[in-house]
Length: 460
Ligand SMILES: Cc1cc2nc3c(=O)[nH]c(=O)nc-3n(C[C@H](O)[C@H](O)[C@H](O)COP(=O)(O)OP(=O)(O)OC[C@H]3O[C@@H](n4cnc5c(N)ncnc54)[C@H](O)[C@@H]3O)c2cc1C
Image 1 (cartoon, protein in one colour):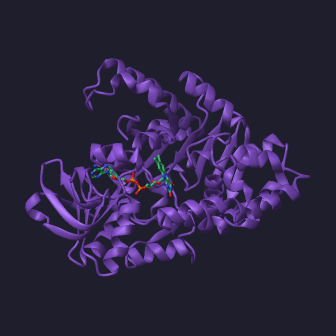
Image 2 (cartoon, rainbow, N blue to C red; image 1 turned 135 degrees about the vertical axis):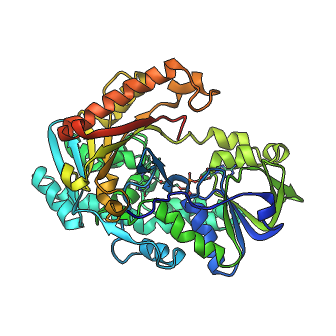
Image 3 (cartoon, rainbow, N blue to C red; image 1 turned 180 degrees about the vertical axis):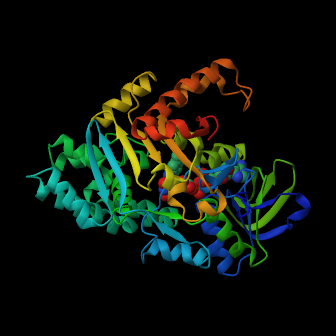
């Protein structure tokens, strides 16, 4: 059996870091690692500072009870064929990161009793829809053309972000004339502009969990980019999702850079209106010519910027315009038996009680006892061709459903594993309901269950 090691990065100690770098990147998620690797390839010495015990942000994996689970990479599109994204991964990992294509049926959308197979390839997707929705051929062609157009115009939409502030202000005023109007509309508005067939709209938005918002709230831009991203199918990192960070870190180390873990940044140091370094939670200070924060919008402006800078910039008014991203529960389950023995395939399942995604989510957000508006099931061990080398005779499953941050307010200040009995009870109810959803689809797994746990928004 191959040795299992999912932790990546080097533990931070002030004595292990240099005093000065070309660039400091705060946060080792996909964005941070990509930025750091590109800068390193351009000859820069880059220090990535990650507060967690392992690098990778949502691409990290964790081990428990003899199993390993990914936390935020269930499938990636466009990397199992020549594409810009594949090229980016090849460059930043210098060819170390390998991808395994999933089966052709990468997603199965299950709405009530109806099942829809999302099969890799634009033609297959289009044919499936036309077969299931006779008379809607024109709408389906228009929809596919539209998501391709959105993708094509996206660089124009975001171009202002690469401009000086004064220029971006002007650019953003003319932007509505440069891109399709759908860039500024919600998914539901755009789709209802194309068709009144609600069943078709429900299927077209059958992957809404990928962007965390139901169609009435989700920007069509987000929907279109993700829908197009998966049109050619999905792939999974060979060796599991921790391979993403593991394969990129050597590129960053090449020019004397490093990716530190347990490296909690407390504040960005600013003098004369310019960031010149960071202060760590342990008090150590590190300086750099440039500071990049990939710690998330809220963390960056509200936690890392000094208070006087926040007031000067009027950060509180920015915060009001941005709502927090969606929260979720996830079951991480381990089973005795290989994926083959248990009949598990790589196809993701998207399970809905019926097609009214907006209303179902609204009802559930108001009352957690309502039916789950969406249950997403992924089979990571089946997707990874290297899994059997590391964990022979075992399988893993993940089951995800939305959550509401407000349900957890009373435990906000509590500590992991010390949140009290009422919290454990609340969790147990969700865990049981989600496991039942899994067993409804895969009854053979009930007898083979070896271990499971549930994450809540407090732990992810
Ligand atoms: C449940 C779930 C499933 C998903 N599934 C998929 C999928 O199948 N396919 C896909 O392509 N995408 C998927 N995603 C989305 C994808 O995982 C994320 O969009 C992506 O990984 C985010 O990368 P990031 O670099 O923006 O941020 P993050 O990964 O969030 O990284 C930010 C990092 O900053 C660190 N940080 C924050 N504050 C500090 C500080 N003060 N000091 C030091 N470090 C700090 C954090 O610890 C974190 O590691 C999924 C997401 C979730 C939540």
